[in-house]
Amino acid sequence: MEDSGFLKPTPGFATAAIHVGQDPSKWNSSAVVPPIVTATTYKQPAPAEHTGFEYGRSGNPTRNTLEECMAALDAGKHGFAFASGLGATTTILSLLSRGDHIISMDDVYGGTNRLLREVTTRMGIEVTFVDFTVLENVEKEIKANTKMCWIETPTNPNLKVVDIAATVKLTKGRGDIIVVVDNTFLTSYLQRPLDFGADIVVYSLTKYMNGHSDVIMGGAVVNDDALAARLRFLQNAMGVVPSPFDCYLVNRSLKTLALRMERHKTSALAIANWLEKHPKVVEVKHPGLPSHKQIELSKRQTKGHSGVFSFIHSGGLKESRKFLSNLKVFTLAESLGGYESLAELPSIMTHASVPDKQREELGITHSLIRLSVGLEDVEDLIKDLDDAFKASF
Ligand SMILES: *Cc1c(COP(=O)(O)O)cnc(C)c1O
Image (cartoon, rainbow, N blue to C red; front, side, top):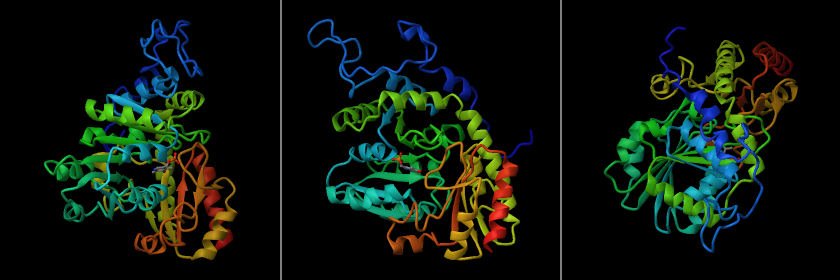
């Protein structure tokens, strides 16, 4: 295989996804597939003594199995599962107190933007949005009360790449600033933020990690024992926990994560290359293309890009509407990261909750379409896009 310049695949990744936390000897039945334990309470041998589990919110064997596996995939020590990606975010933000300050990437997931602006600020926490691709911007905003940097890389839907190692370096020695990286777009298969010194990696497991568009769940992985203890406390104290059934599904899905991400990666890159040559396409935003402004950073920090990317066409809202309605293999829908291909218009769908002015500044126009390339035959996907262009322009 030619050397693409991206990081090499992590040795043992697929093996860990299939075996870590899954040891059959931990179950009385020696079940090879971890059972779904639904019990909300556990028998105690004596008052206030327990055998590792006492109440379903504070711990559940099916959930622990998933958490252990997830942690291994990010080369972290502690994994956490939450009821949703935003549930994970809410819990992590609760590490902070009134008067603290967060610096967030400007181009974050719409729901994260809304949570920070409309909920977190009401708790007396200051939030500043900046473009982390220009680190001087971040440096200028660091104050005595800055306690967290929230980054997402690549960003949604502009596919900007943030330098994780450089962000970590910038915050070092500037007080206790927790660097959080939302790794939903790439997963631990393509990018491992803890390797670059990030403190917390957070996921919407709803997307690639589960990958089958049938579970809403969030996750986090950390290395530091003290930080893990604080998060474990909050997971139980705030109660934003997932069901054992859902944990079973996500754990099952991790078994094929490496295979799925490889396919998402190659199909999306093929489609991005095809789109770049299309006469109606003005720009393709895909961090695996040589034309991407930050391709070198992308190569240093990732093992390639996943299936989600955006493009800008030469039409306006009318053409976008027609194009999206004419797709037959791609489904017009929000979300991303499943086995099925999706297409959407962020300006009026996923990013409708971002204030008009901020959306304009971010360049999320009616001509920007986001794709989530699934696992179908790539020839069928390209033909679908081709037909939709012909029918709409
Ligand atoms: C979907 C998503 C979230 C929110 O996750 P939910 O599971 O929907 O709560 C957070 N970050 C990113 C990048 C996402 O795509």
